[in-house]
Length: 332
Image 1 (cartoon, rainbow, N blue to C red):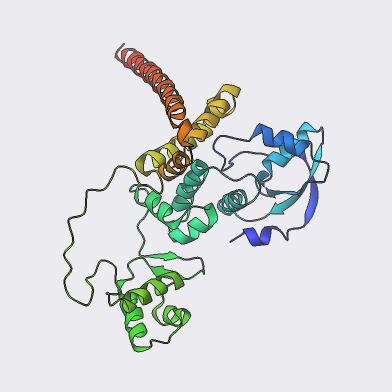
Image 2 (cartoon, rainbow, N blue to C red):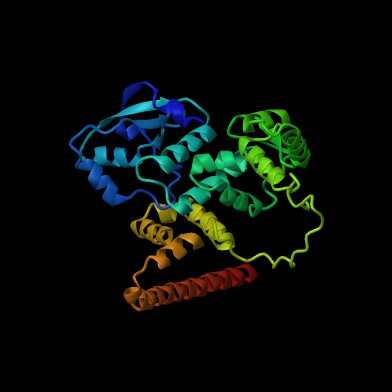
């Protein structure tokens, strides 16, 4: 995508006050500690990347804040001339893989936005830009609702368009793998039109005597399996409905001027962002707690959870009161 080209852009100087930090993929805003750390750096910092058409900073908001903190009036920039959608993609790519990384909630929200702006992109292509797993991107896509068009083909990381339902291509790949047992993955992929990853899966299935298509029975005959349990409410990789809804909510709050332009609002976003961890991350965290600290951490976690529940209850009561006043005013 655009990340590889960005490093070769020419460097020039630009007035700091002419640049905008709107539309950042960071839901909770900048990290003040990181800004102060950059401001204390003796060595020159790399140039920031700016979308020429909108003057928005694509990569380097913390460096811009540090320069302003040091009293600088101008800063080194590299201008990007793509579309606004391409500029956001570049911002996600740069911040997901370089410097201060995006949080999980940031990447979930970015993936949702990219799915909406580029519905023809494959899960793997979006995953490579956001730093998420293809499985997580697929989960976000499935839960995104009817607003996302369901296409018959998607563009992969290699730029090729492939059908979403690739059962026929899997069958072709399986047949080629059976008749050409010495064929390389690239040959199987080329003959069938599949990606290398899918070609590998097909070849492994054929070698095990299974059908190359997903969900089909192995060639040895019917296999009886117990009924699959009902889908869980939460996906272990992505946090399920809760993580998806939280990413949506944080994205909306971040765009609300009454939240993002106030000190208390930004503090709230940072708090919410800190707790926006996927189930798997929580499990990893719990597994690494020393046994002799488990009871203390559990007690602290319960206290924190109780505080959040109390805050949520107060906010819900305020929301109901506002709705009630609105209803009364409407009747009057």
